[in-house]
Length: 207
Ligand code: MLT
Image 1 (cartoon, rainbow, N blue to C red):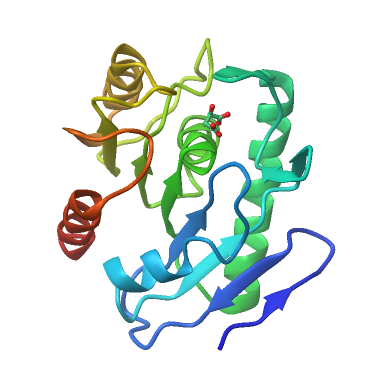
Image 2 (image 1 turned 90 degrees about the horizontal axis):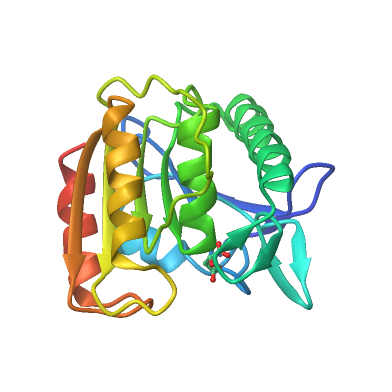
């Protein structure tokens, strides 16, 4: 049983893993999710790994998110920059508090988009990232040195929210910044399926 912690920074769950040698996962939910959404996915794809899972602080109606948007796929980039720094500081504080190595992000949709923003704006925070149904976060991305950080992007060929060219542009941006990007396009929509789980599990096992 895991407990949600409420404190001055982010409402979050920390679930210690049984294998301290493995890097923790930073779980970042999609719009309308919360800190519990990706826990079972995290346990399935990375058994024994510590899980750190914050809840996005921005509310769209009643739906938590990690940053504001002006319309679907149109981001408030000033807010995104600020929220990215805020999340980066949360990760640093949580590493201290729970004694963690730099995490690998596992983000879905809005959570994948802020994970991509973290890579580009605060490259020191993550050891790598699995981005599920992600899109380009910044119109003009900051120059980052992602020197061979592993990044997995899983896109859906039928995704109505993330156009194919946008996911390709994200893969290109991260690759040009030095990341070791693996981009797979699945015969899927915006939702996740068994194929995502299998690919994630394999990719994480190779980390
Ligand atoms: C976003 O706003 O981050 C993307 O449009 C994905 C979503 O949350 O629907």
